Image 1 (cartoon, rainbow, N blue to C red):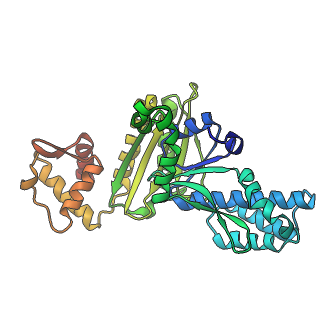
Image 2 (image 1 turned 90 degrees about the vertical axis):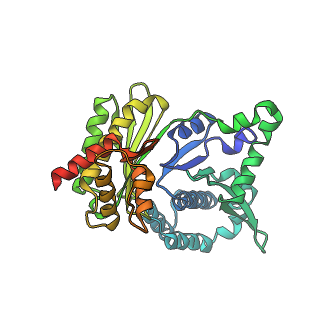
Image 3 (image 1 turned 45 degrees about the horizontal axis):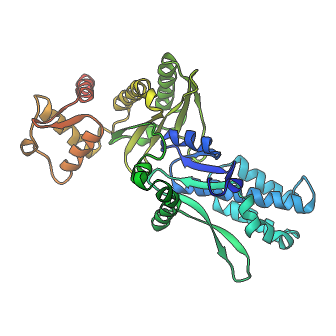
Length: 364
């Protein structure tokens, strides 16, 4: 933004819901226009692809000096806009229709080469794991320049070194401090529940509705104004935005893992929101622990075995009887769930663990 404000002013900064919510505040102040997507590079890339098509359509209308697209193109474009599920084939079909349009040959260079660099309203795609997706250009055999979007691995590192070169020149004494805390950090907390029946949690299911009602009630009691944001790309995601009279912005969202039998409760906000957000998240965790565990899962049974061993007090690691080969994994994941904690005296049940164990005994 500092090196080329004319190009980037008002351009899109696309990040995922897992990101620190303060990043949205920071990029707004810098002049970017933030946009949220569900978790995963693919959703960032889909938003970029749609932005590219929007620019091509804009160029098509401008070249024709018309406000309405040809009916075939308009129909495909309307269908994509109304159905945000990832469908590369439909995007490709629309691109083919634009390619076949009579005006494309005349305007291709204006919507791909250097002029396109000024047209594309995209700047950065940021994924929580560290991927920073930016635009590059590839020259085809026929001389056309087309946009490409890369972000993983080496390119992210090169982007970082290049972007921070100015800091090294202007603040050599505080260079590493500036890198470590370039922007104010917000509050981020994740809670996980393992060994679950994932099919119990989906949009409008009884559990989904129970969590929504709980969040709304708890949030309002703490002075927040809650509202749901729907993501068509991930319809079962429960994402609730929280605003307050102080103009603070926070969020809580709940989603099933895409790869593991676990579900997560995610809290995002400013550091000052910590004392208000954490109790809301803990209430959701208790609802999930009481409702979604898979009692027939082998790992759940191993978890119960460890609970039984710790019920009489702390036990050092060497004295715990962990069933092979998965006992160590379950022990680690019980720590991640904040059900147990390791101290000098050994592993012992946390307050949440004691509460959960008492509810299990009542159910039995």
